[in-house]
Amino acid sequence: MRPPHLVVSLLVVVALSLPGAVAADGTVIDHSGEGLTLDAADDEHIHGTTSFSSGTLIGVRVKSVGDTHPFLVSKAVRVGENGTFDVTFDLSELSQLRGGPVQVSIRHNQQSIYQENATLVTHNMPGDSTLTPDVETTATTTETAPPSTATTTDSRSGFEVPGFGVGAGVAALCLASFAAYARF
Image 1 (cartoon, rainbow, N blue to C red):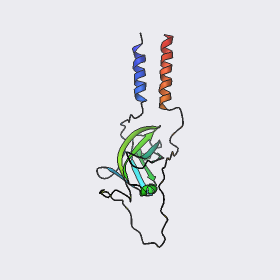
Image 2: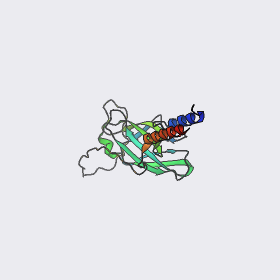
Image 3: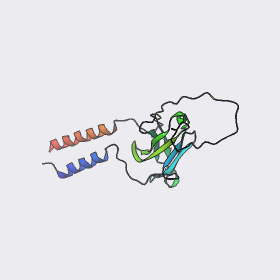
Image 4: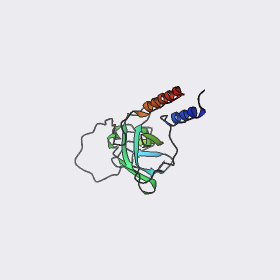
């Protein structure tokens, strides 16, 4: 007969370590309007608040969703006073894409703590789109830059730590529990 505390402990640990579980800790991405909209520009800010203490390292990740051109950009940022964070992305290389749905996630210790769906607005949006990029107009220049080619970006900017991962940790925990059970 198995001790009930061992079974309950094992179930709790396995449930907490499942990937895809997003904890509701009070993290919020600030934006105006009903939904989050990101411009494909070189100075796109994502800011918000979190319950983590000042100085805690968190990651902010923007990735494509659905049938858009696949991309992933991420940056690490330290939480400021009052739990605020602000990170700037250079999304200008994505301006040649068709735009569309993206997902912005806030991460801590390689786990997603908050996710929000957003829309990437580019210069090459579909004809039936009602979204337009927020482009500042400047004085006319005589130089023209050659068209840039958009590339897939996989930026791991230091907040992901290599290791065994969640799957190996769960497997090791199961094996240790089985070994402990076999001793009784």
